[in-house]
Image (cartoon, rainbow, N blue to C red; front, side):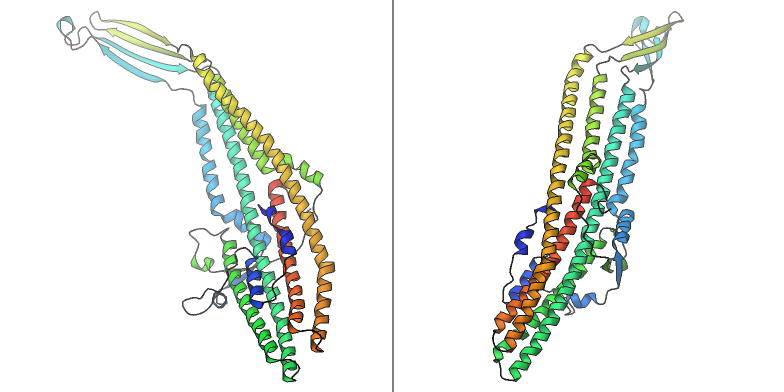
Length: 450
């Protein structure tokens, strides 16, 4: 789950002084990022290939609308729901009339040879149900339909949540791309400073080579991030593109456009009040009603059904007719139905217990997410207002100390890496906040931003 991420360890992690280690950690800490550039058959990297693809900006509201309209899973579900109309019609039907006929004392021997002594019977019969079984079967189908409709609502929320996750992951990669560009710009400025000092003979050639390696490594990181942007764009559009999508639609690269806003964390009481309307809780409640309807249907099986028949019998030997009445009913039906009643009643009790447990678990998950969101906001505020300004001042002081020979290149790089690491932590913390917020709204089924 989202709230199991170890943000505390990430926020305290220091990047290695080695440039290549910096690149590896910067890529590995993000989900879905590759460790190296993939080379296409024409010799270009993925980042080079993506420049030829058509691109388009998309806002979150548009992505959600596309997912609701075109998601393949959502499109299939209504067709499945429509089957319940036929199921209810079939369940509410009473047993049908049956027509039967028989011929006795025919084609035998002696006086029963031929058809002169035959007895011909034609009758209609029907099973008459007692205990309102047809209505209870219809009620069971209605309960199953309500459960499926609630499952559909849960599926819609899941699709919307996944769309939002992919959208914000795309925004995250865009922020990392901007972070990598800014880092590269700073390192190029540092390289100019190192070159100037090397030309003046103030430092040795090793410092110059090391700074060049740092710049080249940052270039590789930037290209890798650009390639991952294309992959994440494909993940986003998979939320509304199905197997019949055109090649042009599949080749589109999306750019997530929107404000990076962190909402205020709701009060705990507001989340507790939302529990009774939480989608997963409503689904558990609907499944409990299905079990209850099945129990009521099984209870009706104790009522004995009666089979009645009415017919006409003709005696060929005397040329007479007689009215035929038929009556039958099972014996000990109530005793045989009691076992099914006990099973269905036990199943209903289990569903009720699961519903209560589901509500308690939802409450715990919502409150844990809320606390984790509060922790995230506190860390973000501490970084923005305290750590990042201090690290920036330290970086500027380390640069001045390096220029006058008081600091070594490694000390200056260490100051740069601290700023880079803190900025990356801020990106990850803000993204982690959004992922937890999405889960909070999905579980509660509410828009908590208002």
